[in-house]
Amino acid sequence: MPIYEGDFSPPGGRFAIVVSRFNSMVTESLLAGCRDAFLRHGVSEDRLDVYWVPGSFETPLIARTLAEAGGHAAIVCLGCVIRGETGHYDHVAGQAAGGLLQAGLATGVPVIFGVLTTETVEQALNRAGLKAGNKGAESALAAIEMVNLLAKIKL
Ligand code: INI
Image (cartoon, rainbow, N blue to C red; front, side, top):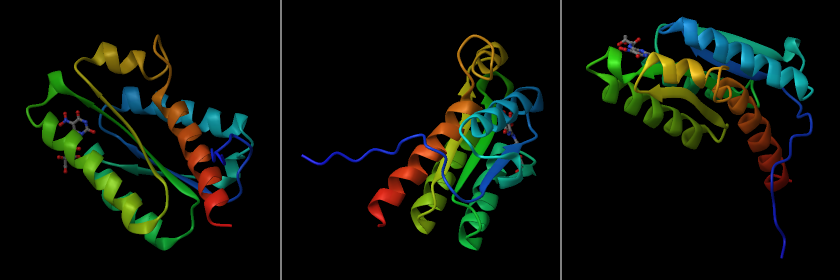
């Protein structure tokens, strides 16, 4: 029974990181974790392009534009939406998730959802490098895994 999985061997190509300024105290830590994970897995800094956007809501447009431009093996999107801080949490989080999914499906380029959605600032900080891992680092690994899996399918 053939089983196909993406591994974490160093992939070729460039990687885009789209990162939201909103809640930048959190997203800067996500970006640091993401960069560190790429470097540790053989993707050097000169193959990383970082694009800052105002908020998570804006990540899908830039992700899709980058994916259509074709210059990146995968696009990692980082953001932080905290329910306690906004009445339109569901709109921002939901539209970001849906838009990023569509960007990947429409273009065939892996678009990684590295947007934290939490109830509190404390939960967000914990998932941005304190007590509960770093979503930015996880997102870099997801990008590498998807690029390597797609390479096995598109022989
Ligand atoms: N953007 C976020 O990334 N996180 C949030 O928690 C947030 N809140 O709280 O509103 C947020 N809003 C801004 C939004 O993403 C857009 O930048 C803005 O609506 C302009 O389109």
